[in-house]
Length: 340
Image 1 (cartoon, rainbow, N blue to C red):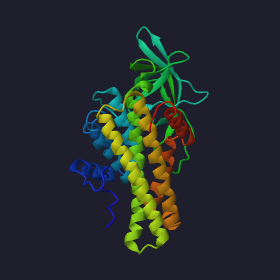
Image 2 (cartoon, rainbow, N blue to C red; image 1 turned 90 degrees about the vertical axis):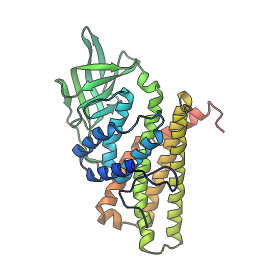
Image 3 (cartoon, rainbow, N blue to C red; image 1 turned 120 degrees about the vertical axis):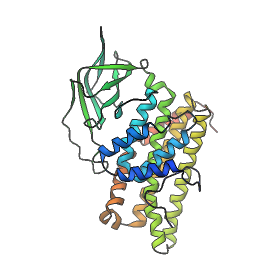
């Protein structure tokens, strides 16, 4: 029989989920679609899950995949909190986000004062700005370099800008600009450290683990169809394509986890691994979405709230992959090494 919708996700073929993943799946199901409860889950599980590169990268990415398979709203809330804890490399109170996006016409600047740094300006694409207690924020120190800062969002001078949010997927995980007016901030690392550190690549793979889990969630609906009626050859074709795509995605995630924990995914090797994994997983997700559309037709998209929501959520989440631009970045990096 097809797995239950809240079944945990492992990266090894045929592996049985352990008690930790099973409990996480149950907690995610309880928090389904509820941002405040998802934030509580993030804080609670942030003390239980290891940062990548410490010998437990596979369980971490299986946890993220499990969250994605159960509910992408919950996963979208939890993943940046875990990333922030990994960056800080120490336990922290509160619910954290990571805001590092840049857009033309909006520049957040960090200024040194006799009493420390303050932030001034606007930061775009700040997810859950109205819900978090703290954030790690990149700001410009001079015209050429950015630096990461830890910010308490409850202090005066932090204000969420009024901006439209019409998303049909991840509709409750609102991203808005945030304005900073002489907001006290603590530097985390040297200028440009945030982008140069190995964890930047590993965090990007963690996001891909969520995409993989979301794809598994969609694929389970396709598999359920096979249990409900005998598939014709076209139905079998769609199921075969999905299986091949998800097998490729889980294989690259598992391989990358081994490389990270073995110390072989640092520097250029880590950047290359991240671009490869994200490309393979994003391609797999789009294969799953297309196959589900073609095989299931319009009925589940129009009469099944869970399936329609998961498809919409995954389509939005996948746009964290920059499509052809990320593929070109992979090609550019490959051209400088001998990969095969």
